[in-house]
Image 1: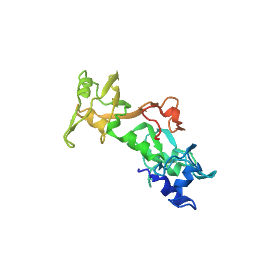
Image 2: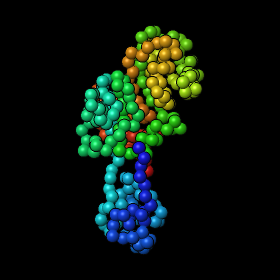
Image 3: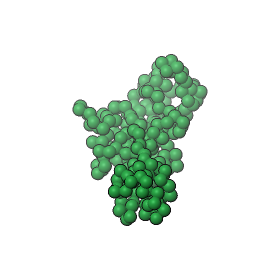
Image 4: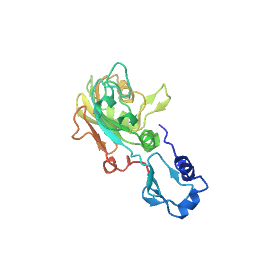
Amino acid sequence: MKSKTHRLDRFISQNSAFSMSDTRLLIAQKRIFLDGCVAQSIQQQVTEFTQVVLDGQCLKDKEPVYIMLNKPRGVVSATKDAKHPTVLDLIQHPQKSELHIAGRLDFNTTGLILLSNDGAWSRKISLPETKLAKTYEVTLAKPVGDEYAEVFRKGIYFAYENITTRPACLEVLSDFAVRLTLVEGKYHQVKRMFGYFQNQVLALHRISVGSITLAGLGVGESRVLTAEKLGGTLGATE
């Protein structure tokens, strides 16, 4: 989802009685404040979350919202669905209609899912260059062999995309359960990686994205994340 930005002079002309050419004088007279600071240039960018105050009147004051949800099985990672409950159906928030999903989970995959109205933040999470770690607990149909961890560390070739997965960390929890950490999110990647060993994934549960974890959040519950709780790599966009 693309975030809209405007030059300050254009924003002033579209949202007040002043013209673009008036904006330079308004700045010189220190009559415009952006996020509590005196505006400095007509070329300053006004984003969807910039607070703009002119002569004491707030022209724009929209807050970014970040929410984490512990998604149950059988819930769709979508904002609308005619047949099944969606992640938005589980959230009670006055701005829920503005939210979009930052990193989907399959219908039967459970665990941590993030939602926001901040498109730039969502793109930051999704970009491969961010190398954001995502950790899953995986239950398998067959016992895990000793060779799994080394193969996952080296990467597995996906012929359809003609790519090799980035190194992944595999921790064996029991004969049939592992904890897997990835820094990418290809289509059905976890299932396809275990498919290399012809080992079916019976259950998949995401427990963390970056520094955000499910700790203390029950199934179907959600929680608003503050900027402090977002952590370094998942920090709110400026």
